[in-house]
Image (cartoon, rainbow, N blue to C red; front, side, top):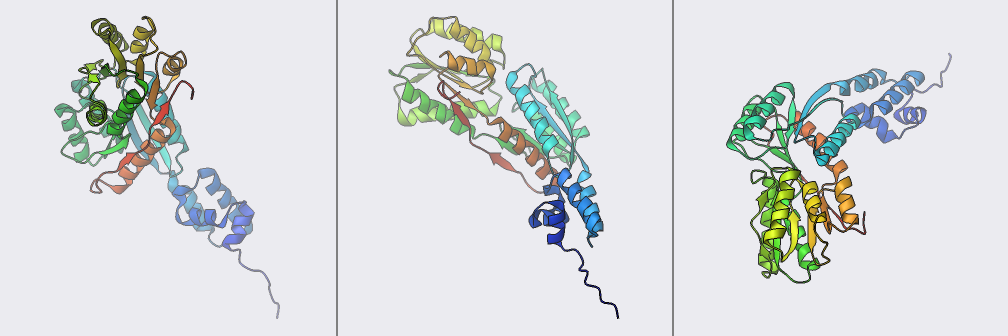
Length: 347
């Protein structure tokens, strides 16, 4: 009788042949969506080469995550550097997603009036399986969101939380803490408490309203010596922001600082640079990009509070996928993460 001393290849054998760990092979077999396509294909090729008994399962695992997921993201004006940078980062995060192929529809909206935003949300909801939006809080927008939710398409609010009759997930910063952090900076850097001007993009953008609320709450609690002027809406426009700052500096020459909580920061920077620089004047701005970085370096801005863009993009794609896979009755996902603070010496 002829004896055969050939063992059937095991998972450790396959791991060695594919130059990966045993845990990676197990994930290819049982959680293929958590492994990159290149690695899955390498394990599959090695399985075929050594005659691995689970070759059929491996091949299925390679193909299964190739289901296409149609995700939509609606951002504000593309002319704004922050949204262009965020859009690019979300695109990269979608490309790098290992749980399947993502067909990303990324759109920018120039007209931010609720009557224009609402139909765009409905249009994206008809084309996508999961939707993330930056939008103002308004009854017309809430109705559009509910219309999308009723069709089984989950909605994720970015940057600022939104409310509607249905459940809306959220990805962004704790905006109340952002306002508190900005106030703390003024309290520590201003030599003599005085008036602080405040710019917001819109009173309909809840993140900026929450920023302002946190800002005021800090001073009520810690230093009532500051006078906080009424917030002025820039409507996310650099031109409007510049006009507001010029008027603030004219009407309140004794101002000790400026909090730029919303859009239009480049216009505010231009107005500040056009006036004689004061060493005792503190400016806290929002989002780090080329223009604000330059303003930090030349002393026009004292401190920048910013979203960590790569983390933001990753969490956006991850939450869109979680919401899609969980289904309409799964409730909401709320993802908040820490913000970055940049000083002139740290950029």
